[in-house]
Image 1 (cartoon, rainbow, N blue to C red):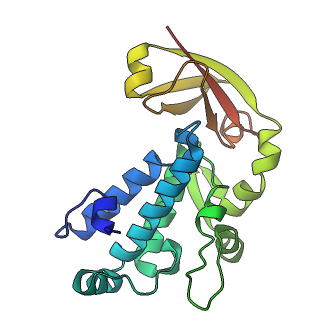
Image 2 (image 1 turned 90 degrees about the vertical axis):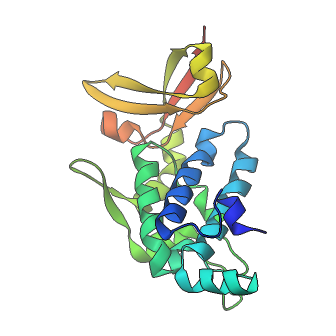
Length: 219
């Protein structure tokens, strides 16, 4: 497996270029942005996380460049070199209204040192990660992760009409509710009748737990 190819980079890419490519691909392969192709998106997400877990760590990257192998592959949040970027991606997901629950299966890694596995759920429980997702609003990853099932039971549905060109190329729309605005990123290639799920997005609009489901119509 060529980690540089997975991130769309050459071997002489800088550390910042590697970080930027990883963040862009993480958003592209989030399952919520690939309705109907979640299994495929999960696999792609696993691949780019493995690639960044190696190339984002200078010591692991040097080993990979010299020997063509990665050695011991741990999770991206296990290294101080890659953990900050992972935190930033969590902020990206939250701001975009994307969910986190799929990450627990992504980071069930049997190759982790010591012969055991370590999950995203373990990470957020131990760390209690909290960050500012919207101005003046603190988001706790542990709360978001464990509210997923409850949120889906209290979802709001809205219909969004877009043009065929917007459906083909992707677009950004603004949802206005209760004098509050929520950015909706429509991934390219959506079909009429598709659903874009904004996980836990109700909290930013009306203060209640729950997802927002955007039903896409084209005309």
